[in-house]
Image (cartoon, rainbow, N blue to C red; front, side, top):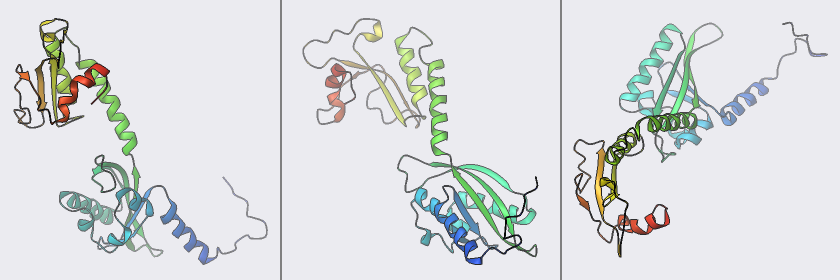
Length: 246
């Protein structure tokens, strides 16, 4: 495609201050993360988007080595990737989860492209990374995967106890570290619940934990369940009658 020269300005130099203004706007307003390291892998520039998502002020990042930015094993992995890009000049694409102070809901998922930066004379002057926050998209995909798995695994038989076990198996660890399923007394025998008077009786039908043997469970599977009146769980009868969480 041939682009015709603009009228009255063919070959005109772009004012240097425009370049600086555009660069400043790019790092301040770009919705994606931009990170630049010098050849010793110290961070020399970072976009405001990284600060907004991570919750870490830019002033605390500038001048720090990659291992200080990503402590522990994550830092080792990122450093190795940056050095590889500096050495061979081949861009690397990655996707990883990083815990961030700004997000109490869990780790954030970043898709990144890392590339080598060279000067006008061809000399290597640093390495840059473009980071795109894919957390919302990834969580939506994980929810759909969980719903699909739940539909396939829960209710495979008419046995209510097995259904309770299947629910616990699907919920841990995707939704929780520990899950207990308690049924109204008699339901496990195929009877209709007939609560009378006070709180109906419960019996533990299933329990599952990320820790072996589910140490969080105070009641073994099959045992009658009672909750201390001072605990929120003791309010379950009212929630059950209303059909809402307590």
